[in-house]
Image (cartoon, rainbow, N blue to C red):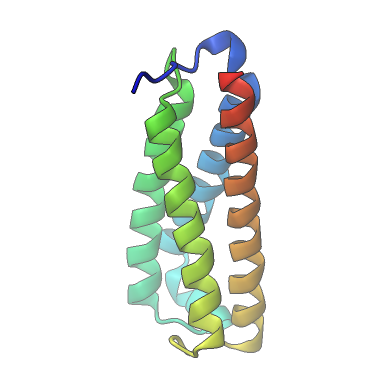
Length: 134
């Protein structure tokens, strides 16, 4: 099966969505790292978990930024980002619904809100990938 590269001219929307995802993800990761104890008090999860999530989010955000900055946006790389965003969305919702973490009320609302935001990024990336390939 032949894949069609996503070239710069056709990928403006996709590149913008990936860059926005990278920026939001990186900012979230930086906040978790810089203020884990304070955020933990507000949201519920302990500072150690938040630091781990923060480190992951910084690395993930950097990887998504690199994907967005490439001359040709990789369709396979974009599909991996979409899959990870969907997994994050479902995992966050499950964590709240199943009580996997000890969220405060504000923490539960935050987890659902960010899950929805990540889900929107995934949907926009799907749309962008389709637009870039046609």
